[in-house]
Image (cartoon, rainbow, N blue to C red; front, side, top):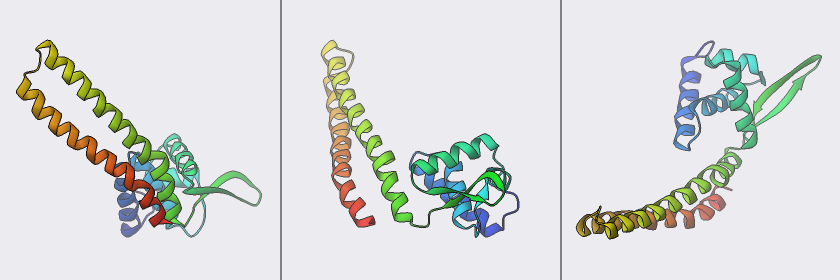
Length: 163
C-alpha cells in the first residue's frame, strides 16, 4: 500500500480480512479502513493509488460501501470529482451488513442444506447411498440446519444490541 504508514496499512488489511469474513471482497474493507482513518475525504484516484487498486476496483468498492451506508460522497469547491468519506458510526454499518449480507446468506445456506437432505434421501432410496451413510449425513446436516436456524433467530437480537 502506497503512501500509508505501517499502522494505517495494517488497519486497512485488518478491515479487508473482516470484510472477507462477511463475504465481501478484501478491497471493500481496505477502502473503508483507509477512509475511516483519513482526516479528509479522498478521491477515487487517491483511494486506488493508496491501496494499489485499479480505479475500477476502487469504484466498485466505494459503491458497495455506499450501499451499506458505510461511506458518503462529498465534493470540494471547483472540483467536479467525487470525494469519499467514511461514516463514523460502525454500528450502522454492522446493522446494514447483517441485514443485507449475513441474513440472506444464512437463508441461502438453510435452503441449500434442506435441498441436500432431500437429494441424499433420494440417493438412499435409489441405492446410491447406503442407509448407514445416509444416517450419518442426515444427522450432521440436521445439526447444521439447527445451528443455521439459531443464528437466524439471534440475528435480530444482535442487530438490536449493535444499535
